[in-house]
Each structure stands twice: as C-alpha cells, then as structure tokens.
Image (cartoon, rainbow, N blue to C red):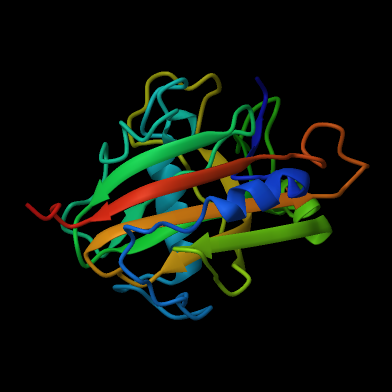
Length: 237
C-alpha cells in the first residue's frame, strides 16, 4: 500500500449506555477521577510525545498481533517498558468490541487512545508525502467528534484531551520489511486518556467514542465500545 491509515479506539454512542452500566465493579478499589493535565510532562516527555512512543510500540508487532488487535488482553504486557513511568493500553481497530484483562505494575501512568486517527507514508519515492500532508490526513475526523466518554470504576472522567503528534517514523530502526525505500512520515491526532497511577487493586475502565464525519467514507463514522478489567500490582492473597 502506498500509505496506511487507521482509526483506533472508537465507539458507538448507541451502545454506550450498556458499556457505562458495566463500568461499575463491586470489587474495584475506588479510583480518583482525574487525568494528567494537558501539557503536563510525565517523566521527561509531554503527553503528545508519549503518543509517538505508543505508536512505535504498536508497530513493533506484526500485523495481526498488534496491541489494538488483542481480543482479550493476553498480550497486554508485551513490549512494555517495565522501568518507564507509562504503561500503554490499546484501543481497537474498529472491527470488534472487546473486553480485556490486564495486570499492570503499581505506580504506572496509563495511556490509552480514546479515539484517534493515524497515517503514515514514505518520505521519498512515488508515494512520498510531506509532513504537513500526513498531518492533514489525521486531523479531519477529530474536528467532527460526536462523543468521547470514559468511565473508571463507575465514575465518569473529564473529557479526554486532544493530542496532535509531531511527524515521526513509526518503524524500528533497520526494518527490512518496508514496502518503499527510505524513511517514513507518520502522524496521529485524536483524543487520549493519560491517567495518573491507580491505587493497587482491581479497576474497570470503560471507553466509548464516535466520529460524525459523513465526508470520510472509511473512518468518518467509526464505532465501537471497549473495556478493561485492570489489576494494579499483585493480586491480594
């Protein structure tokens, strides 16, 4: 393919009440309903720069085994930086509704795409794109957000922040399977959740969002619900 676009972590507003109802958990440790402030650094990186790290993480796996294609959370720990301050959670590619279980070390911030667009293209050759052209591909649907709802342990969180990445190359250095010569431009634009570390114990995170752009036949009406059952730290014995 000359270029690649994907919408990740999108949800159907019509199905959302069912998902919200499932958001409360009798076993969950009460969670503080807060998010990291827009622009606040985690470690030495801004939230937008963490989205670049997220996409590089996602593309470190083969197609079919990428985190947003995980049906149940069994791949939740793969490729994570055990020593870093942020743990990545995935949305989906819009092809299914999923419920995942994930055990996460205590003390980690959580980054998850609520709804966003991604696009990459080669920088040189027949299908070359400039950085501004790549960014234009990912911004349009995010101007047509209909709904973005996040529920943590039965409590609605503030509206997720819209984050726009810089242009970056999404592939690992030395990737020999590229379909086109030379480096790539990629960009992501959308709504992300960056949570401070949750209290040890069980939590339930439910996300729903959808676009409303009739001019984009591919991704303008992307829909989905997904949720996570999270175990923060080791389970109690």
